[in-house]
Length: 192
Image 1 (cartoon, rainbow, N blue to C red):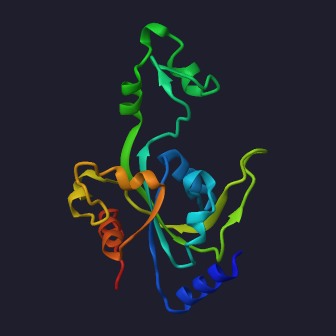
Image 2: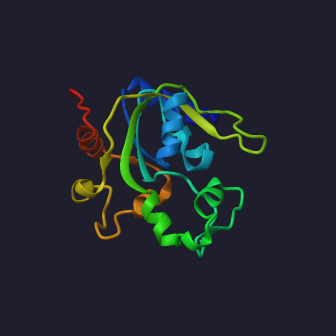
């Protein structure tokens, strides 16, 4: 780990400067993280995780139910290895359009909340060619909450018409006020 980053995280921990994060992942991937007690962001990149320290909080936003790689053309996925191709598109007369698939796969909810436990991120081999970075996380029992009723109140969403834009970053810091608004909506309150 970079000495400067290590020192900065030490200062933050000793000054009790808790930070709050949004991670973006499909509900399916979030649930896998809950089972393993970990968080990963931005397809396993280390950068955002290196900014997190023990005691920081992360809330996951899930735009979709499942992560579906590849593009859909006329209802058939380009990646023929996907189960969705064999399960959902065997009967070409019943083939779904890309728009139908996106609609059925839509989640648009804050799905989980947790506290960072590990001192530094670490790598874990999930496949021979995929060794993502992760943090250990203690997840809390929370109720999923739709984003729509919160859009007008969240300060990190500047343009309320194009509200999804901030989530394209995959992971970003939010204010304590925004964190508390989302957490309270998920049934979790913190005594300040």
